[in-house]
Figure 1 (cartoon, rainbow, N blue to C red):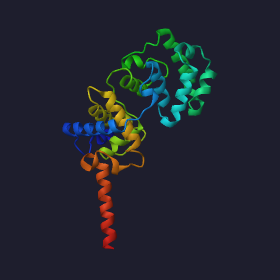
Figure 2 (cartoon, rainbow, N blue to C red):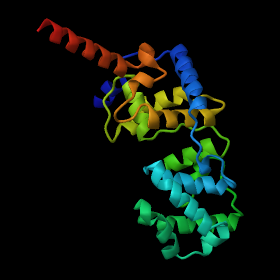
Figure 3 (cartoon, one colour):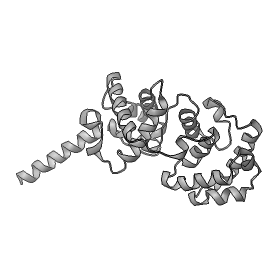
Figure 4 (cartoon, one colour):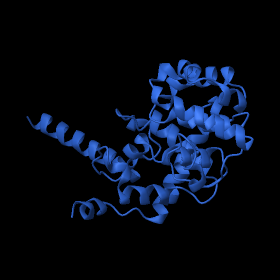
Length: 240
């Protein structure tokens, strides 16, 4: 019964609305695109390492670790031959010690395959250290495929858009997955996904910068509600 209630969104997101929202996000994304080394990696496997390090980790923390990682392990062979202590030394600042053996096994796999990486979600999920998010991120950003990216920031944005509560399980809700899928275009998903990531990191933050949001009150119920609450508060204050 709870799931049925969660699926009953308070607003109908029409196809026309999705097209317009996507258009505004893409326009915003082109103007505010963030340059990170893993967005234009020299080799595809570098992108895979980056997505593993970035999962549930701040970008600012990953940047120096990513650069140090590739400097220490410039080839898949050097990563495969590295000791776990060598790998742990590099990723230690991120607090990801548990990923050390997985990165070691991933290096061994890549060395055996000549750094060939599967181009399907199913294939990617067979790799050491690669879960659903990393698989989708690598495929969409580096593998040339279509994938739906859902991280904590995107979950927050979508929940605000339709005025739904959010908790640790929301990312697994059917309604949210379906909504994220509807927004993700069939083509050019890379540009769209980067735009949404940058937007949700810079504008739709835990303390949102609604005044700078390209969606305005035309589509976002959260911002519309905030404005109404602000207007009600002003009315009560003036009346008092």
